[in-house]
Image (cartoon, rainbow, N blue to C red; front, side, top):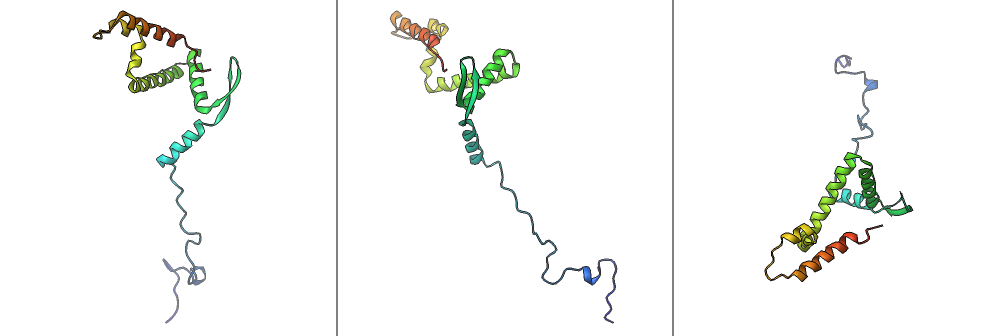
Amino acid sequence: MNAYVIGRCRPPRHTQFKPGQSGNPRGRPRKSPRADVPGQILEDVRAVANMEVVIKTPSGALKVPAGLALVYGMLKGAIEGKSTALKMYVKLLTAAYEENLKKDPILCLLDDGVLHSLKIPGDTKEGHEQLRALAKRSRTSPRLR
């Protein structure tokens, strides 16, 4: 008795896979490359931050790197009274000053309030006056344009 019975788990012979034929002819789909590779993300961020963009300033259009344009936009928003932009700009500014103070601790001497409270052994009034003059020049020096 060689009769093939069609039923549960026994499909008709003409619908079965032929010998050598796969049930998944295209195969398993390939995994997409991971986007969170730290080195690649940092390279992409740096590349985008260094791209040149045109911004509108009171003195006219200016071509600057995108990172600088972002900071300019935050400052502009902060001046306009946008609280989120103000918070972000203050955080950025604070981090920048802290980083500079770590590199060169003498920079904290440029604040007049600190100068008055300093008690450095052997310091002179002339030294304090020179530091005050330096502080005054640093506050009145031209900024980045």
